[in-house]
Amino acid sequence: MSRLGYNVKQAFSQMGRNKGMYFTAVLAITAMMLILGLFFVSFVNVNSFAKSIGKDYNVIQIYMKDSNTQEVNEAVGAALRKTKGVEKAEFVTKDEALVTLKERWGDNGYLLENLPENPLPDSYTVHVSDKDAANKVAASAPEIEGVDDVVYYRDTIEKLAQLSHFIEMGSIVAMAFLVIVSIIIVANTIKLTVFNREKEIGIMKYLGATNWFVRAPFMWGGIIIGVLSSVIATGLTYLIYTKITGIIGTDITRILSVSIVPAEQLTQVLLAMFLCLGIGIGVVGSAISIRRFLNV
Image 1 (cartoon, helix red, strand yellow):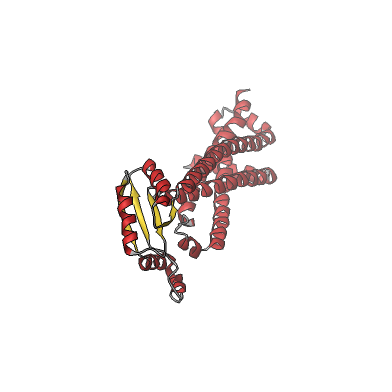
Image 2 (tube, rainbow, N blue to C red):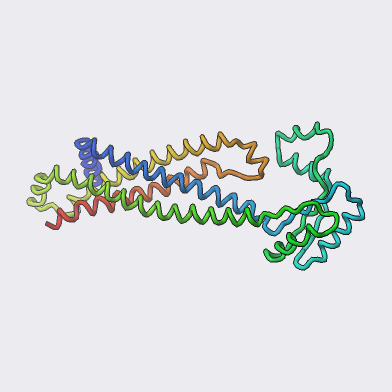
């Protein structure tokens, strides 16, 4: 513990003597982690949105014409159930649909109570076995007499999946680039500190100090840079994320049946991820900067 305390004390002492360099390093790495954090929260929410809508991938809404008689609606249901791949077709009256919509709107459901008439149509909720069956039903249903419209989320889901994959790949590329740049920044910062203490380190080596004894304070300096950057970047990401979600509002997300990942949940994951990343950057960057000097 005494050795650890000495190393940490020396690390802070180095930071105090080189405030400008360390401040610049923290600022640069914080900015890079912030970019990575925004990529991360975007990916998590788009992926969550895609999965939420994906639950309806094998569900198709078939809307009836207002002029339909009960016999026509029943004939539509019979035709749908005969279609290959259809597991079940549930008839939903316009009154049932309005009740469901009110529940979805939550506290704003009262806005639907004073409508002069129910604007929603009768419909069938069709559950199919797979994607091919869904495509077949979506293509054939409009040809059935009495069907007014067909709603199928295939295109939306596929686009969201592509967007999620794009953000994921972009995050990986950005992370690799930012990690490399961050390591270079830390390495150069530590290297300048090493040059400033060159005579002192030479004396320590002459007196028999081991490489690890010389290296440890610099590695702790790199770790401190990483930890400070991680905490600041996490805080900034949290503030930006809560600001954006506050602008979007919970009412809109409830109406659209889309949930936003809570900021607290994301913050915990981000902090753990940034700490691991920051400590790794600090250790690797400091090790690279002093290795050449110790081997001379």
